[in-house]
Structures are given as structure tokens and as C-alpha cells.
Length: 326
Image 1 (tube, one colour):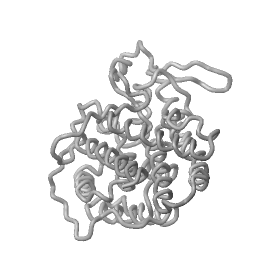
Image 2 (cartoon, helix red, strand yellow; image 1 turned 90 degrees about the vertical axis):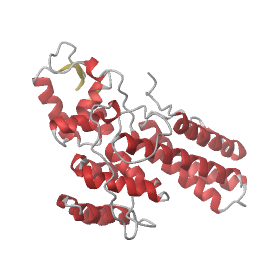
Image 3 (spheres, rainbow, N blue to C red; image 1 turned 180 degrees about the vertical axis):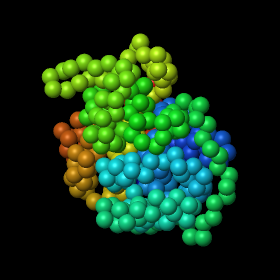
Image 4 (cartoon, rainbow, N blue to C red; image 1 turned 30 degrees about the vertical axis):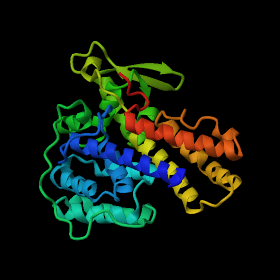
């Protein structure tokens, strides 16, 4: 087994373990956990990542579908579309099959996902729902008291809309601008700004004007919400991280398909993906992983890419993600 294939296998194994653990935390059936989930789980990012990376694990796919059949009302279909538009993690056929599955499971509003996917999403090499699949009915409702399920807790309180994600973001950050919050929570900027205006009116927020922008934070004197309510929670921009990993995997695939190509050719292939890969990882706060690679060439660039991929794998294995240290 060559080094590229080893990197591929270990990276995918660590990623699958993380996806499994998140579904288990949310109520999916499964035996034990590989490790802690040190961030607030993003249901839509988890679903898209499972559709992209989890199709090789039929058990994981089955448990995700089983959970959705029971808890689909807690998933934001609009946010799923918004996030897919930004990351293109899932392929057309996967989304169409998911839409059909959820429609058959009595979530009629999901019917539109299939039509939307055909117009907006990239082709995929396979589907998401296994042939002849039937749910086992083993999944449970999420324990919304669990810190990792905090977004679902807020959705249970306030409904499935942009408000839970905005509140979760505010409770896990010191302060932020509307555009920054909108980017992280995968909701339209106008929707986020409207929610911030309402929260500001209720005195749950305080704001500080900086030029033409306002910096929002929770009001520590608020009797409704207080920063200590979110103590210990961590926000991690999972969709952007998965997008960065997708670029890493695609590059490894390209290198694996042509193992005999020269070091110079390998370096060119890596350099082609660096801008998109680094942008996605920067959005997730993991921009230090491949820092400086755009200044390297030849064997040094190839070796550094391998080292960066190893760092991503370690991040997944050790569950040491940006901003999640206590």
C-alpha cells in the first residue's frame, strides 16, 4: 500500500468515525462511541457530509436514514439547500433519492428537494438510499439536554427557522457582525439581520457601532438569556470544514489514480486545488493546516501536502478542532 492510499484510508476512517458519533449523540442506534463530539452538532452539515463521505458505509447510511424517518421535522430543509449551494457536498442523485425517501416517510415538503437538486447540484456517481432499504425503527428522539444537541434544543423551543442557529452562534461567541454570523450559520443575510434587530429590540442583545456595521453580543444583564446559558458549548463551522476535506480527498484521488506521475505533475495538481481548499478551511478556522503551501514547489510542496493531510486526520482522530478547546 503506498503512502497516498494510506492517507486516503486513514482520513476516511477517521471522518466516518466522527460522523457515526454525531448520529449516535442525536439518537441514532449504534454500539459505543469512538470519541467525544466537542462542538455543537450541525444537523444539516452532518447530513450533507454523510451523503458525501458515508456512502461507503451502508450501516452509517442506514442509521442516518432511520434517524431522519423519525426526526425529520427537526431538520431545516431551507438551510440544507442554502448549505448545499455554498459547499456542493452532495450530488444530484443523492439529494433526489433523499427527497424521495423523505416524501415516502410522510415529509411531503421534501418533495421540492429533488426538483431543486436537479437544477443546482453537481452530478454524482451514485445514490444515497440503498436498494430495497427499509428502516429498522431503532433511532430515538434526540436528547435535547445534551450540549452537543443544542441547536435541536433551540429548534424544539423556537421552531425550525434561522433563529435557533443565530442564538446558538451568539451563545458560543463573544460577539460578531451580521455578515459573519450569516456566513457561519448558512442563512440569508437579510434573515439574520432581521432576527438580530428583533433580539436587539427585546434587549437580549447589545450592539456597538463600528463605521457602518454593528457588532452584536448577548446582553449580560438580560433576564431572558445570559452568556452562562451557553457555557461550555463550542461552535465549529462544520460545513466549511467538510468542504475543505472534500478538496483534500479529491486531490488524493487524483494522485492515487496516476501513481506514476512525476513529482512536478503532482505539485501542479496540488497547487490547482490550494485556493479553494484553503478558503474552505479558513472559513472553518483551520487555515493553519496548509499555511504557506502556495509558496512551495516540487517535492517540498508534495511532502507538505501529505503532512497537512496527516494533520487533518489527527484533528479528526483526536477531536481537536479549531475553537473547541475548553
